[in-house]
Structures are given as C-alpha cells and as structure tokens.
Image (cartoon, rainbow, N blue to C red; front, side, top):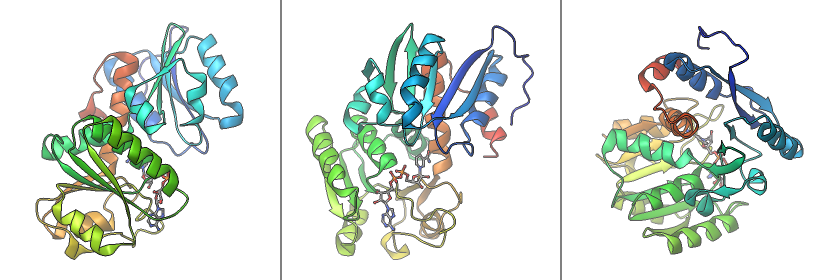
Length: 290
Ligand code: NAD
C-alpha cells in the first residue's frame, strides 16, 4: 500500500470501485500510489456492492458529486441502465469498468481493451493491420475484441468452447464484424487443427480464458509446437505472472507480455479519464512490484 503523505481533510475527493467479491483488488494500490505521487488530494476505496445495491450506490455517488468510479463483476453490464451515455467500445462489448461523472452526467466505458492494446503496443508496436487469435469469449475477451477491432487490427479469430458463453460470443462477433473494419470470426476451440492453422498465420495470440490461473497453473490451451518465433503472446491471466503459456512462448522465441500490464494500463486509462493526468507508471510499477 502506498504511504499517504497528503492528510485526509474536508477537501479530499473519493474515487471508488463497486464490485463483489473485491477485497483482493490491486486497483486501490495502483490508484492511491498515483494520487500520492502526483500530490492529488484524492483517495480510492473499494466497496462490496453487487447488483442488488448498485442503483442505490450509483444514486448516492451521484448525489455526493463523486467524480468517477470503477465497476467490476457482477456489475459490468448491470451498471449501464443507470448511466446517461456509453462510449463506442461499450456499445460494442456491452460492458463498463469505468464511470465518469461530469456534473451529474454519467458516462460509462471499458478500459480493459485499452489496457490490452497499450500492453501489446508497448512490446511490439502498433496493432494496426495485425492478425489476432483470441482465446475466450468472456468479459475480458469481448472487451479486448471490441477495442482491438476499433483500433485497427485487421483480423481477429475468437476461439471458445461450445459452452454457456458461445451464443453471446456469436452475437458480439457478428456485431463487431459488421460495425468495424476488422474481420472477426468465431471458432470452436476443440478444433485443434483450426486453432493451429490460425495461430500459424497470426501476429498476436492472447489467452483471455481463465485457463492457467492458480490453482490450475499447470494448464494451457496451446501446445508449445504450435507457437512460432516472433509471435506476440499475451496472457490475460496474471496469477501466476509467468503462466505455462508464457513459459512455452518464451521457449519458442515469442514476444511475451504478462497480463499484469493490461491490468496496470486499464487503470491508467481510467485514471486519465477521471483526472486528465497521465498515471506515473514507473512509480506505480515499483509499488506493485513490476
Ligand atoms: P469470464 O468468466 O467472463 O470468461 C471465462 C472464459 O474462459 C470463457 O470464454 C470460457 O469459455 C473460458 N473457459 C473457462 N474454462 C475453460 C476451459 N477449460 N477451456 C477453454 N476455455 C475455458 O472471465 P473473464 O472476466 O473474461 O476473465 C478471464 C481471465 O482473464 C481470468 O483469468 C481473469 O483473471 C483475467 N483477466 C485479466 C485482466 C487483466 O487486466 N489482465 C482483466 C480481466 C480479466
């Protein structure tokens, strides 16, 4: 936790995160470190709020003229009904993680995909014209899909199991394919030959499923032999930081990007929307041990 040097007074402003369960979140550490470094008299606090308490919480924050807040599960879609407007990326992905309050007008957006784009571009240059293979079609995957399509990826092949996520995935894939210049397709992840061929033709591979996450860190959806040198491999899973996918990718000479950077950069994008300032990334990286 950052050491707060600015005293909390009657002037201190609140930024919050509404979700449940959420006490484990890294966001307070990230934002409070940034506020402290920039001498901003603000504090970021987490509140355990689910869908039942969401409307009251939003009305309360609005009445208190709170500048902004994050939401996470289970509120990322439910929040939309309480907002005045949403961003282009939210229109495509149907989710919000950041709300900005401009004098009572609430605008929602998702910075998860921006975090992904920034993490990839920092390591391997622009995503414009790139071919992407995206594993997963849950919340993180669809936010990445929408932002990557808006930001100029040329083709995105989404691979998912034929599970509870499939029908919504098909709907989102069709919408994003229609509404952007990116060619988006949905594939069955159990079709190993198709997955192998798409990875072979890709510039970027991202795992946005929960496979590989602790306590199942010995699991991975991609065989080492299916990876190639120069492929950018990003794993949204950041616990452990060095996932089995990233270990395999490193052995094959891929450009590896940890999901912790996506986490940090989605926070930086929210921070910019609330404060107008760039997050002091070097300082925050040090605080979260990156
Ligand atoms: P979600 O529950 O919305 O989606 C889960 C996805 O994983 C679905 O597509 C599901 O089909 C797939 N899946 C689950 N088990 C699978 C299996 N055995 N084989 C193949 N696919 C399987 O979850 P989410 O919110 O999208 O999060 C997904 C992962 O991304 C989590 O590990 C989460 O911690 C991580 N995440 C990271 C960041 C970040 O900033 N780095 C942000 C959001 C989520």
